[in-house]
Image (cartoon, rainbow, N blue to C red):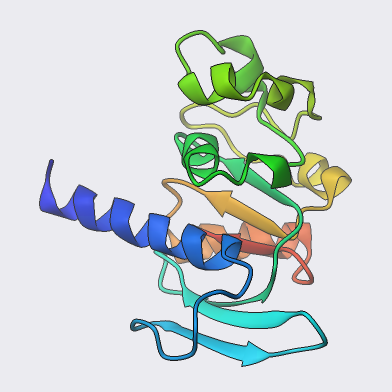
Length: 162
């Protein structure tokens, strides 16, 4: 595996783990992350995503969507499938050979949040209908595109992590 791809996968997985951990990461664990206490039972995690943007997230996260190639797979591998509130149509069109869909067929019953697949543009209106707390995106490391999608889906409480 190429070193740059390995580093990208590592950082993406780390960001996903921090968000889904529900505040189990303590203050000062690793560069680019910090934890602050918000309201009762809620912790605010600060994460730097792959686009270099600083994101503040209230944890635990209750609802999320994963858009782009491999995003849903990574969310399922992190055992966060119960928090997914919508899937891309691409997942329904070709579920064969996807072990995460075979393990969690209930995902196919969730609302569609966009077409998905290579070179597709996320649909902000469909994303807003399922009202996720967090939008995970694979392969959208351009900060401008990430900011544009976050602006279209509302800056609060939704956060986009690439």
